[in-house]
Length: 401
Image (tube, rainbow, N blue to C red):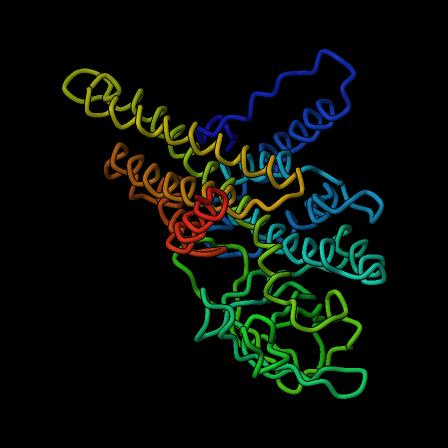
């Protein structure tokens, strides 16, 4: 099945008229992604998603495309893409199959933590291997009793000579089964006040004492593995402490999550747009009372609202990505984009299902997948309730009386 047959058209990219390097890079990259999605992803997405099958062939192709090094600078073997271009790539892929964007996004959050906070030696050692996809992984933050409140983590690291011994459990870890290395948030000081100063972030490779206890079954977001990780007297070299100093783990993890929230927002745009595309197509084919349902005002109102959500979400993602590219703090912008785009995905997927009627509930159409995937976006990388708090606090901080 081609993308046009599924109702998901390739992005329209204007061919640059001048020699501007950035514009040309964007055109060529998006054109490459469009062709890959159309030729390789679309024909297998539905089968892999319904079977919850890890897309090994697509992962190898993503390595060849350089997606595991998308935002890693060229000096470390990455593509060195801006967050703005990266977000467009994520949106394009998510319109076809959201799951595979998570395979490289979780990996790049880990890479971003090393890039922004790691020592020179850590960058030289890890980033080239991350960029090539030789080592893939993600971010290990969440625990069975701790999600939003990361200061309450219980996974403990105790220094013994030139190693730390780690014990604890992490859950809902993307790439947990097929990944080889993770940015692991632990407690190094139980008595620290404030609590966040007792957290540290390590680069943890799988090995003795590091096991995957189980794969977690999910409503949607199939194909990518989500797992529970167990650490029992797991020894990690002290040189793997990101930045080389204890007490900065929460700050480092949250810094990486800014990119993750932009990714989630871009996924939201992708699902919202795909839901709209499917609804537009179906509403012109389906007839009731002697005319296509797109001629009924009730359907037109739905389509208008869906299209407006897509455009508004797109602009918020672009603004957040631009703020990230400037290098300043962008938690408010990323939070706004993530909040609005994820809610747009949920609302559009439901409206598209309603427009499709019974067919929207069928696995023969992609709409039911959008409906199952979208709610994750309101939860992952910080719940939407937390995004609202972040936004409000930043509004007050940036606008003192």
